[in-house]
Image (cartoon, rainbow, N blue to C red; front, side):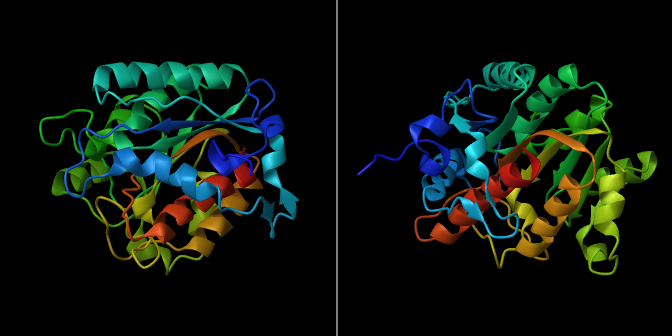
Length: 286
């Protein structure tokens, strides 16, 4: 029996670095989580669960793994922020410079800011698509400027436009920042009433897009294994519909991350959900 390794456990001919379209980068960094812990186990759980994901996509009617998916060495194992941030910025730029699609698997959400910092060097017109339960716009949290609760504030300070969707938890400080700068927010409570929100969100993005997906954007009835769960989230087929619309929009998604899975021993479903979502992101966007 073949020993499985890397994302999806693909045969060697589909995992060569030089010929693969996609580079999966595990980032088991966790140093600012503030409620539930365990996101450092997320990348391994996603990769292991991905070995059970079927390669054939029934909607797209293709085997998307044939584009090649290389799984790189992990970044952030030492949990030292300055080192991790520098490595993430350089790794993102390196992958993009090779005209490949990076998919970073977290780890906590703080990792997205240095990744975006690297991406904007290649694509100066970059915008960020942000799916999350939380606004993540605090100036700092628990004395950490780079906290997972401040990641979108750091992106905002880079003057990179962004669109946030699924938001249903924020502080007064974040509310004031959103109002002052008229930031592009699609709050979860409004999504059910606005059938056009997907088109509106996509149309607000620039030609080059980086996609950051915090797994707690998903409703807790579908994914519970995350450090900061919130009720009232989005659902699987809404996500698939959004990916479909985005893939047909003419926008170029240049990379993505999937963060904040905190796997639990008796909850294989959440890890499998994340693994299948990661493959859907590849299938629709890479």
